[in-house]
Image (tube, rainbow, N blue to C red; front, side):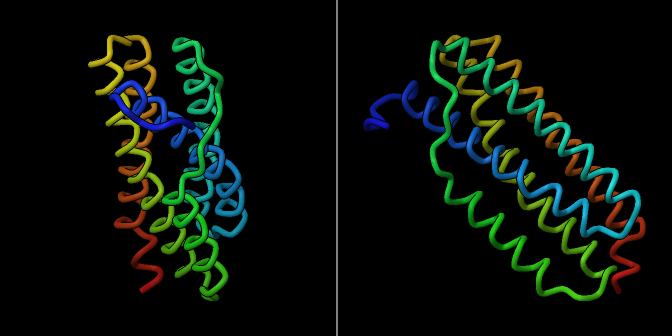
Length: 163
């Protein structure tokens, strides 16, 4: 990608960043589902995996609206979060503690996605792309809801079991 010299350039770069990030999340979530032991956690992570597919589709629609090719740029932040999650899962032997680690890792990823979708939605609106802003806001709402549901599950039972 060429130099970033305007908000339009930054918007496109960040859009490519989250597109790459979503691809990495799609690869990681099945591992979370496989390694989780709590049935509700498995269900929530599977739902989020399905939502990630929808997020990628929305991003592709945004690229299309902009007349740009849907492609990612390496997101070192997401690569780091994925690497950390995999490392953590390999280190945790106790099943209940692993469930708590899955929630923690999933929420770290959600928080990154929340910042990106929030920023992108705002920029899209400011740059005169209200339809793109709406699509990005839908993904933002999904991420916030997923984060809230994971928090409730952790507080309701997963953390207590791990303790």
